[in-house]
Amino acid sequence: MNISIITVGKLKEKYLKQGIDEYLKRLSAYAKMDIIEVPDEKAPEELSESEMLKVKQKEGERILAKINPDAHVIALAIDGKMKSSEELADGIDKLATYGKSKVAFVIGGSLGLSEEVLKRADEKLSFSKMTFPHQLMRLVLVEQVYRAFRIIRGEPYHK
Image (cartoon, rainbow, N blue to C red; front, side, top):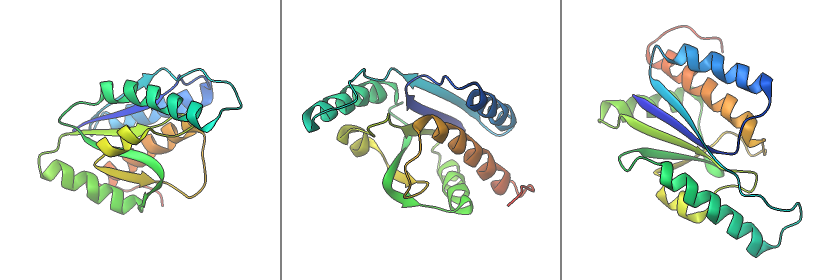
């Protein structure tokens, strides 16, 4: 299975990079995983509604340009469906079973995802009603994908 995480912005925090690298190494036994970063749109701290929309649209265009046309797209969104780790594993397993070997998870920037990206998504996934920094979500997502493959294979993993 080929899994990509398409995300806005560069990861600067060393501790997050180390955690992600560790899970990517572990995941290599199960799937090919790439993290694709698209540049975030520079914007002032205070934005009007229309300025926010423009930022999300520009970031959205960059995201859409990186999505493989054959990919099953899962957008991380606060209003998405919340799943248990077992449900995520089951979903990934079903995608593989039905020939969807390309999966793209999409993490938006600090303002979220554009409507165009959300429309392209095959499903929306939420990890919580809380808001998390998008950089931290990379680590959480990579860990959950690793956990999903352990569950699919029936291998032990702490609960």
